[in-house]
Length: 203
Image (tube, rainbow, N blue to C red; front, side, top):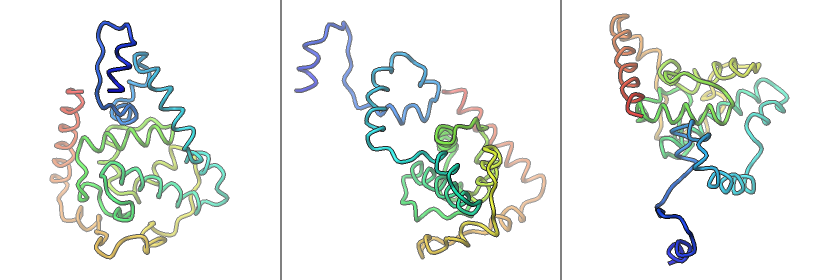
């Protein structure tokens, strides 16, 4: 009724009333941020976000006193973004398990890429998650892109293994890939790139 009352006071010839998550839409389609049709909605979203915002991850990383702190902050940020994409609890996302084995698909990899681009202020490849299939692999790459120095003595699973639930066991990514021949690896990569290209053509 509230929507109907508001519509009655408007002069627009055509109006639609529907559930619409602007933030999620922009995560899938970053170019939508520049669309003037969504400008008013974007302002409302920014006001709400400003009222509930925590310190941006980029600021946290710059203010971190040690490389170890930066490594932990960045890894946990990526972990949180992965959890958002997979709709899973953060503590169910291990740092050294290939994301594909957790259920992430090609469309989700694009969503994750877009979320990381937005939060970290980077431009990243559509094949990012296939090139760096674990959080442990992603973190050094992202840090290098951001010109951040990290001090690492092992993966985050070793540093914060207590955060992983007992029902989630890290997989040995090197062992999995080691079972494949060079030809199999090239075929796997080619198939994934083809799938991504087909998805991008449909956007």
